[in-house]
Length: 252
Length: 252
Image 1 (cartoon, each protein chain N blue to C red):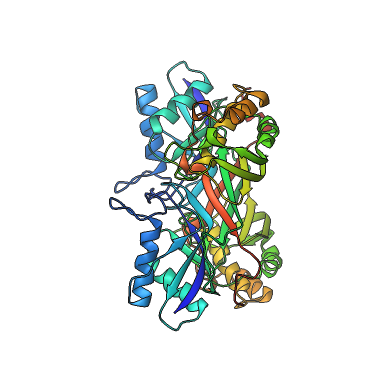
Image 2: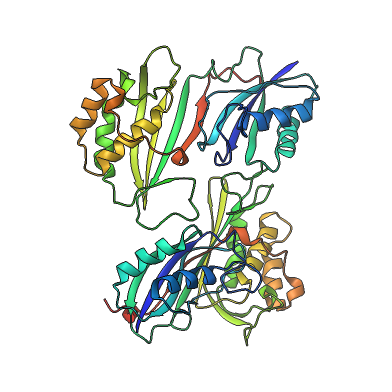
């Protein structure tokens, strides 16, 4: 038995989310089918984060245990072969210690949210960004967002279905920056509540539109009440970019 | 009767190309349907370039004549409404003189070709770039490509179905640059032969792979024989980025 760490990219559009579902396709089920085709026996694929339906990944991480004696390179090649035509790619496979756990060993998670603020509908970016038909003030969004940094009760930005024991989380960093007709929001934390990023982005959009000011945003956070959250941003703009682990996780 | 210049973005994937076809969907037919819904009578949509099946546009240009008395802003809004759900967007509509012709007034056309050189299959960029599973030497590609600049007989890089009277064209500029795991090729000329960019990119890829050197590339151009062309690059990586016109084309 050998454990492998997988770094994954996927287009979340056709999936009901990361997690296996009874009623529809999931990224986890796609991967488990590919792993079983490779290993000849059922394999559990454990991910670092359970992305929602329609959410994308540029660097999701998962771990698997295989019984076959096989190199990490061959694991990557074989899984990419068996994953076709699903829009899931294994970017990297690495040999790791049995203690490595994609979910519990993670020290930081990085997300990106893409907003395109233009009036015409999206074509090439459809399903991969949130279109807002009015120009956003990205500087005001960035300034307001800094209230999130540090340790807070994030109840305002937490989905009512969230299973986490505590609404208290520590936010390391959040940046809002403009690239042409696109506003990119990047943020990092050890872990996130359910729909926390989309709840924050939807509320920051209120700031960008001039409906809220930085004080309104801070007051919404400090109220620690779900009712104070702005509209939740759609899944299509969200990307799990990377997951960090302690430096000694890899065997190489 | 008033003439409008339209700047268009589209995802070429579901289309048989720009030009109206008997047997499948085209960008031109999508636009003509939307224009007829707006104007109440058949409208001819004339484009600057006839992009092939699967080729995208970030800034294709077309012109139309409408009988209705309507502002340019309303033309854009109404066409975007009627185009739904087709992946075609009118980025801009402008009032222009009756002498303006999207095809014949154009002074320069700008193309982009995206190659992603990585082993894992594409997910989010599927249909929007050419994946080459081996690392390319983009500097060698850029150096070789400079042989194209100036006026040449481009028979080597011309599709056998090309209808142009002469294979002689003037290439203004070509750049090959790397952005992370992506190699971008941008080029500009007054006009192009059929499949000229894809023929050039496919041949430059041979240089990037080390199969051809800069001398081989120059010799292929100078031979002026279609048989000397490398493999033609796939449509999915090609984007018509912009079309230039004399400064006085717009009425505003």
